[in-house]
Image (cartoon, rainbow, N blue to C red; front, side, top):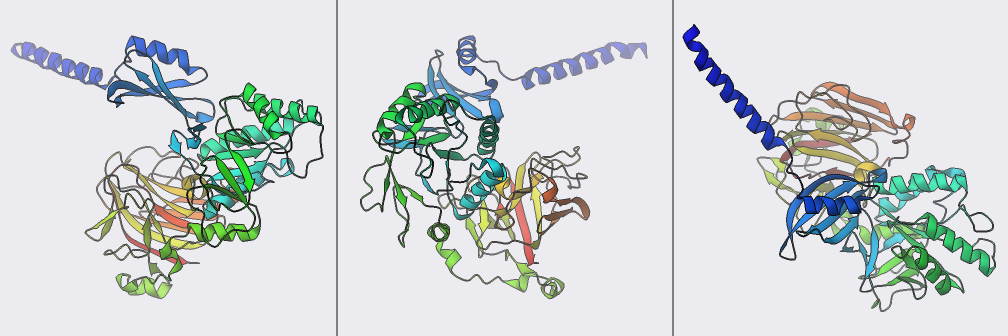
Length: 492
């Protein structure tokens, strides 16, 4: 036996070296000192998360991700010499060459005014429900009157401060911007000094919160806008002579990309290539819904129920997917095209994007099967709005390639980012799993592979009680292989 000791020693040393090399390889690559120094100087209240080496304008660069208050994402681009090239905050608005941008991309305001969203007596319900209403019909910006200024305009009241802190967190949570009208049309008339002080107070209070646009009107709006910009030049202001201007009436010739048209009586067709806000009348919600509906939604959809079992047909189920066509579904992005159909299943294709149903559903029993790759990320979102972050306005039943792992609020079978499943009942990656989701008003039950993993009343959870109770069904694409089949539903 003693002759084996040297051999065993060599084997142990080899294994130790292999482990050491693997551990070293797993360590994240450090930032070059010149980049790290530049990043540290720019972080402020944000915390560094990760970086990647990229090409920017055909030159080597570093893309830095950081997170700040309310978990807001900050992306910074640095040249190889440490020079700051770009700084982009999540949901930030800016104006360049008379064009409104959000996170460096062209953004066209297309929404409805909900002036009472900042109702202090009905917070947070008022602004969360306003978000749901505009998102349901496809609005892309919350527009509300500002509230909570003291009579002399010198401060934001404590009650309003609490509301705006909740709003800031919620808007980032669902990745939605907001426009605040500083002076409500029905507010008491104030003298010039109070209006000036009010504008200065708002500019100081919201400094740095560039996910907001500020609307200033009245006879002295241009002067007040200038005073606002002197304090917070990085914030976007809608006022005469400012970044944007708001005019009443139809966009007959929407040549200016910096004009927002306030429309009371909507035309039959959706205005194209311009910013518009509809006033908050009920007919205008119907108008925006009609403008944003796909042509396929205006044609009655007939499911192919021949793929269902006789028992399911008897129970009242209908087939949401026939295994052969996309009948009943639309890609979330027309340019990307959605899932492909292979072997009787919807399968994620690289860069394809997600899919949604043509119809909306409120109370239902939804059944489907899925399989996913190890470490993969997907999910089925239900009661979804037309726009904005569906998993936070409707809700998502999470799907991960996480077989055997301890359940948490993001595990397979969770109500995404809110409630963990009672057990992780998923099968090993690559195998087909079955899920049943039952929604009846606020009650939601999820059964995964025969095991009940959720049975909850949304009304008992602050984060869930305002979620939509009616909407589309989405199949998500988060960049990993996933396949869905045997998708069927029964309306309750």
